[in-house]
Image (cartoon, rainbow, N blue to C red):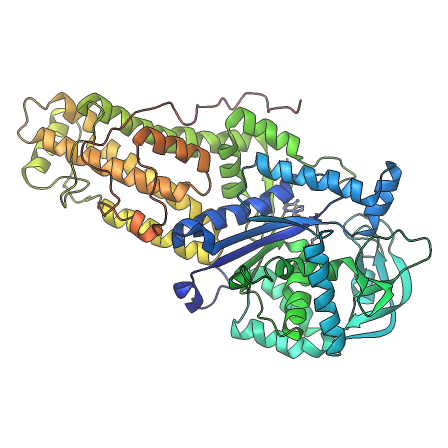
Length: 571
Ligand code: MSP
């Protein structure tokens, strides 16, 4: 992957994993963007739980960012107190994430005491160390984003919000400032030395470019006005001021794990977000952490955006793919199919991705109905038909194309069926194929290439499909009476396919936990708990499919869909 640079020794010894998502503005309705980022974190966490083999070593955090000024206003518009409004919307995020089957270990709300207390402590510490100081600030306020833009950025944007298109407001305030300027060369060094990774590479170039233009102090508080609602966290040293919402929001990543039981998770392995908020995470947050004497996150990953049928999603266009529409897709095609589509077709790298119905159905058919589902039921069916649903044999060192006389009989069988006889050079070495896929998945996970990681399961499925069309076991099955060793050859071939699909299912499970659990039920092969992936996924190893194991062909995991079908609708 571009810009990843050297391999990371920490990953080799890593025995904990901590992944975070942004905490979402509690004013917004959950939509595809929030679900996508949280899905990436969920799948990374599920994969690492399996890779490490010990779920309690992994921590996945998401939540809501609640102290924004606009919460006060929108609550008032509805006749509610800010906390009532926040409670309601935080609940919406929680239930949206449940609908998407996310496995986050915690859900933080910035209105919780555990967050407020710790965030205040950090700010006080920065005041004590002189990293936060009082001064005058003049800047361009983007009210919709609760963010100050510098003169240069504001000018470039023609003094209108690059996000909402509303005019920026010039504000002069007496504020507390974080001395970000002190950390300019230290930050550059962290990126240049690789102490912190910023991915994907294109994003790193942008941030480095901006870093080279120099850093200024950052305002971290706002003076409370008389008629202001009591909302937000006050500056611990000066209660006339409220901590600027972005600054305390960033602290969530640390406040939640700053306990004796959870401190093992710090520093975070990866903060995931979209490109809109990279600067806060890649520059301000590491500098704050450094000033606090804390370790900095290992990776900051900023993906691109979902757009819809070729157009940007925005409030003014009213074309967000909201959770209700995603739920309608989940109902029609299964939650796992939606997860798969978002993961494999999403904007993980530097380019935006389009959500288009036709494309969804095409990918659903190609990857799931015709590949994963079909391959699993095909192999299950053949074991059912030719071996009464009992897995025929252990592989005994044989795999794929059987050697010796068995191979001869196989090829003869194919010749008899009128198919071209191959020279036998294709070996379909499934132990190697599956090991390469598992190794690649682990490597991709380290680089947060989540799409590549989950696709490795499909790579194995495709190899099995290829093997089946190449060796035609169904043809061989018709000629067993005539062929010496034919049954042995058939058993070897089907065992190999089944064992390869078992390993594929492990790699597919983080993306499609429900469907793979269903598959494990049919095949009686749920992975043992507490065993790392490298051991679970060994072809013919300690956790292999057992001889005589009952294989139930089960229901089709994914029914084929018609591209011409109307898209699901909300309601
Ligand atoms: N509250 C801040 C984050 C504070 S983190 C300490 C915030 N919240 S947000 O609700 O606006 O969420 C922004 C994030 O939502 C993006 O960084 C991204 O993770 C996700 N997405 C929002 N729209 C998106 C798309 N159209 N596409 C993909 N993800 C997007 O910023």
